[in-house]
Length: 521
Image (tube, rainbow, N blue to C red; front, side):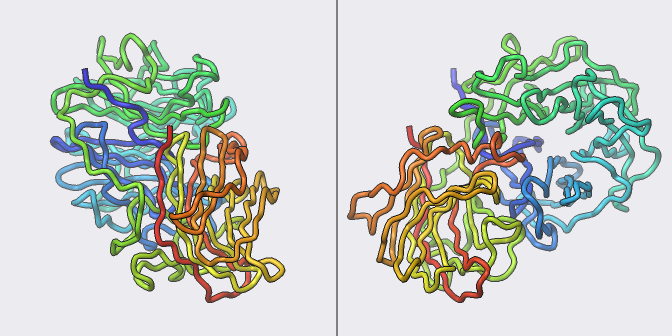
C-alpha cells in the first residue's frame, strides 16, 4: 500500500482551498502580511505539489504598506467556472476592518487580474458557489443582524453575485450559525452541491486548540440548512494537548476524477511542548459518504502523519535544490518579502550569481518593508546557511541571517561595526525585549553563517569559507520565541537574509552568494 506523509504542504500554509479541473488540482493558502500574496500550487495526485506562483504578485493588486503582523490577506478560496479561475479573499486592515475582493485568470499560473472590490460585503473568508442554473452565490461570515448572543457569535450568510458587474445583488440571507453555541467564530464557509443536497462546510471554535470543522445541508441553496447530528465532523480538541497535531480546522472538500473524496484542512504540529513554530500547515485526509453525510477518515476520525495515498497515479515534481545559488533571472518562488516591496533594494544582476541586498533605513523591529528576503521554516529540525560578503561602514549598518515570527519575536544573526571593530552578534527579541546572546570579533568581510534547529534548540555557527570548520557562536538558544504560542498571531516562522542601516541613510549593500535550507534528522 502506497502511503503519504502529512502535512502535504509543510510550514506556514494555512486555510487551504482547492479545486479539481479535469485531472489537475489547484490549491491556494493565506499569506497575511507577506508579499507576493496567496501562493498557488498544482498537483496531479493531491499529495505532491509544485508551486506555480502567487495570485497577488504585483503592487497594483496588493498594498501591504504598514500592515501589522497577521493582518493582510486571510483565507482565500479558489474556484473554476467555464474556463476562468477565480480567487476571492479578504484584506484585513490594521483596524481589523474587512475588505473583500476577487481576481480572475485564464491560467492559474498567472497573470491574475487586478482586484474587483466588493461593496457591502461584511465579514471574512468569502467563497463563491456556481449553481447549476447559472446563478452564482457569495458566502461569508458576519455579525448576526439580530446581534451576538455570545462572544464571537457569527452568522454564515449568502447572497447572489453578479460577476460581470462585480456587485452583490438581491437580499443577504442568513443560512447557518454553526453546530453549537460553544462553537464560536463561525467562519470559512464553502458551499457545494452533491447528490441533490446543498452543503455548507464551515470552521468554528476559533483558530486555536478548539478549532473544528462542521457541516449542514439543505435541498435549497438558500436554506433552511440542518446541521449534521455528528458535528463536528473533524476536530482534535478532544485529544488533549499532547497529541502531535493540533488546532484542526478550515476544511475544503475535493472529489477526484474517480469519484473518491478527500478533505484539505489546516492544522499545526507541536514541538517541545505545546509550541507551534511552523504555524498552521496544510493536511490531507480521506472522506467517505454515509447516509448523504461525509465521514472524515472513517474508523479513525483524526488526521494522521502517515496515511494511505489517494488512488491516483503518483506524480512527483522536481524538487527545489537545497541550495539557491542566485543564478536564475528571478527569485525562486519560495522567497517572500515583508509587506509590499518599496524601492529597488535587491538585485540579482548587479553582481551576477549573488543576491544583493541594499541597506534600507527600515528595521526588522518596525512595521515597514525592511531589506529582507525570507522563506518559510518547513521542518521541526532544519539547517539553514548562507555565504555573505559585507563590510559595515558605520555602527548603524548591519546585515546577516534572521529567523523571524514577527517584528517583536525573532533572532538576528548579524555582522556589524562596534568601536571600530567588526563583530558577529546574535540578538534575540522576545515580546519586544532584546537580549544580546553572544558576540565575537570577526575582521573579514566574507562569512558563512549557519542556523541549526533540533526541535526547540537553535544553534548558530560561522566560518570564513567552506574549507574551514564551523565555530559555534551560541548553541541551544530557546527557539520557542518563534512560536505563535509566545509571539501570538496567525503566521509561521521565516528564515532569511536581512540588511539595515537602522534609520540612517546608506548606500552600502550585502552580497549573498548562496542560501541553503534542508531538513535534518
